[in-house]
Length: 242
Image 1 (tube, rainbow, N blue to C red):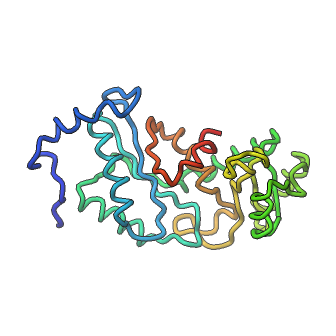
Image 2: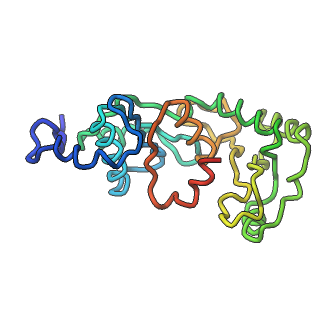
Image 3: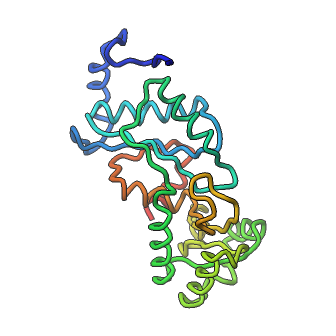
């Protein structure tokens, strides 16, 4: 068995004093109520950047006597493997990072589909078959998709075909603002089709949520109180809130 690199009880420095020094950083935090998460996609092995994120989430949870969730954001069956799940858990354990709970975004696929249907019914999302390169250019130029103003009824019909695996070229986009200064808000893709077998659920689903749709919803379901997001997500924070 590999011994953890970090041991709270035998550390050469006073861990509690270190915790006390940084406790002010979490606004609104209360002892026993803080819940953080490390949402890693199982599409590769951990690198140093992942370790930093895992460490911060782990120690902030511990300093508040709270809970750390290690969540595998397995929303892209094209890239993900069970071997990465096992490797990530083993590497984190070697660092002394043990989750209070291990979850998977795929645990919530049914709920995420249900909520997407509601968004379509409310006119907050629409189906689109615009080719990727064209969509990228239209988003950059602030040009609306030709499908943007389809009725909820029209979108629901396509959504049902997507779920049945009969509309593989279609995706679902959030209907936000094509004139937003923050280009992440220009109708991002929130669901896309795939017929690749998923490492946990096989071919049960034909549509998969993107990280941008799944992450804030699952954070809410799992009771996450503090979401520590790196600077690479700064532009996407507005979408997370939406």
